[in-house]
Image (cartoon, rainbow, N blue to C red; front, side, top):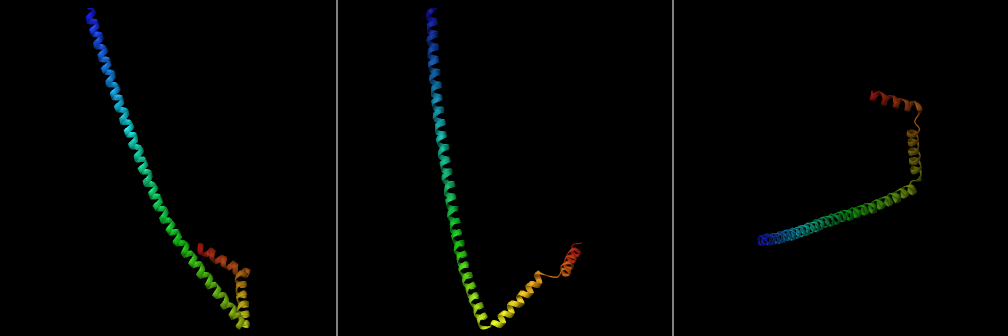
Amino acid sequence: MIKNIERTKDGMDSLIDRTRDAVVGVADRAESGVESAAERVVERAHEAGEYVRDGAKTASRGAHRRLKGATKAIDRGYTQARGDLSRAATAATDYVTENPGKALLLAASTGFVLGMLVHRPERLRERTKEKATDERV
């Protein structure tokens, strides 16, 4: 009977050892699988980051080129406008020098017309307001 008990104990010890070895093997394989999956996730995250970075870099270069072109166009427009204004100022100065009487009459009449527009009689302002009110109704 003691031999049977010892055989049973040995069998149980052997079964426990095999079970422990199987559990350790499964745990090792699971750990290896998790590490491998984590490495793949990290690698894909790096690839996605590189893709986003490359896209941002391309977009930045395109925006820089467009901005540079717009800057050149604005600079050309400014230079042209400055030249046009300079020529107009020179032409006006030449006209006033050659025709001082006409220039004085032109300036006076322009001032008179602007003054009339700015300081319209009160009666005219009221009529304008009445017309605007009638048109709304």
